[in-house]
Image (cartoon, rainbow, N blue to C red; front, side, top):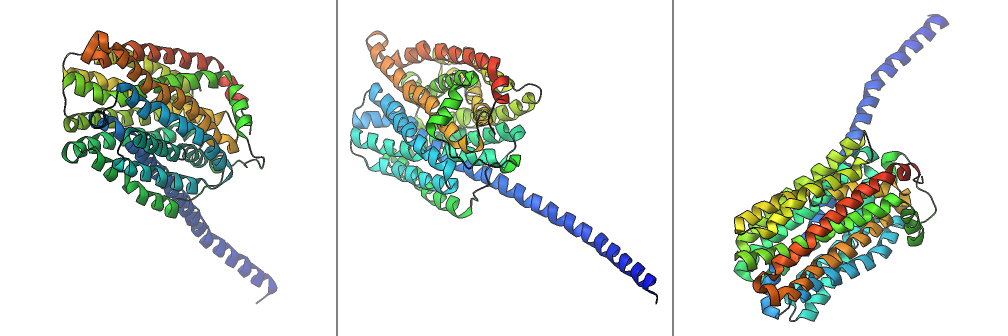
Amino acid sequence: MSDNENDVMAIDDCTVDNRSSAPTQSANIEERVQTESRQKYYALVLLTIVYSFNFIDRQLLAILQETIKLDLQLSDSQLGLLTGFSFAVFYVTAGIPIARWADRGNRRNIISMSLFLWSLMTAVSGFVQNYLQLLLARIGVGVGEAGGSPPSHSIISDIFPPEKRAGALGFYSTGVNVGILFGFLLGGWLNEYFGWRVAFIVVGTPGILLAIIVRMTLAEPIRGMAENRQASIEKSSFRSVLKLLWSRVSFRHFALASALNAFVSYSLSSWTASFMIRIHGMSTGELGTWLALIIGVGGAIGVFGGGLLADKLATKDKRWYVWLPGLVGFIALPFLILFCLADGMYAALMSMIVPAILANVYLGCVIATTHGLVGLRMRAMSSAILFLIINIVGLGLGPWSVGILSDYLIPTYQAESLRYAILFILPLVSFWSVCHFYLAANHLKTDLDNAPD
């Protein structure tokens, strides 16, 4: 055989080898993409479950507080302090150093340790003997929960690209409503049959097991993975991130709008159970079931659907990330007033459906927008700053303000003081929130264009 013929055969062999290896390479790439996709959605679902436990433990107190009030002889102001300001102060105070740690360290480990702490302190709440002990236990829950969302937000923004981020964060934010669902449902029936102490212990214990699952199965993603961006080596401080965010006029407006929206939603989630028990005479079991469906299921649909809709609308105009929360807030306003004024229990519950569905539409939108304004190593801290504002105003002042006004109105309205406390405060604050969402839209495009790498 000639050298030329050998060369031809060698070339033919190479051609055959290349052709045969091409499908294999393609299959390997497809398998890797599928594996990464599964890991991405596993992380999203697991983090959402963790967030659900966050709100189960937080919301449990709302359905139990009338029983606790009678047992420990508390006032509405004390209840408002317990569910609002004292919890929020320690939540946001611990949130800043934890978020700084999350922007530099292993976020999975932070989430696991935080979940363990808040679950343990929820279970401990079942053993308290007085108001001070319960207050300290709830502070422990607040410190633990401070380590949940900022690192989770950061992970989600690393594994989902910007055009899908509001939807992913909207799905994560359904944890609020899933937590409310199980908090009301379990808390209502456990309280009715076994008492409030057993309810705290039963609800708090499973979170300890979940903390172990998170530590063993959740992968720590590469920062900027979804955007093929390299994270800066420079580590950002609280002051630098705050300075950057505060220099963006859009952030100032939508952060305040979110805080005012949270003022309304936290006040409702904290006081609706007490309102329905006092004004309409409902039992905790029946009420817990109703509120689980209305606020839990309805709210989850709203927050997830809101994130997806915002992502779709934002392909045409980024301002929809703040226009949409403002629009749904305006739609919910008359139903909130109807809830306060309804004569019958079922009319009041039906009036709650629209506000419950629309209450947290803003969450996925504003978290995704905040992350769009900052660098890769600023995301956990930016979430912590956003939630500091939301929780100090919303969680800290909302339930407490309603409780204080309810106590103040007792001489005038007696048993109906809570009804008028809600009516006098929440519709006004809700409208104020709508105004700031629309003001934020005037500056959003420019601020997003000027975001750092």
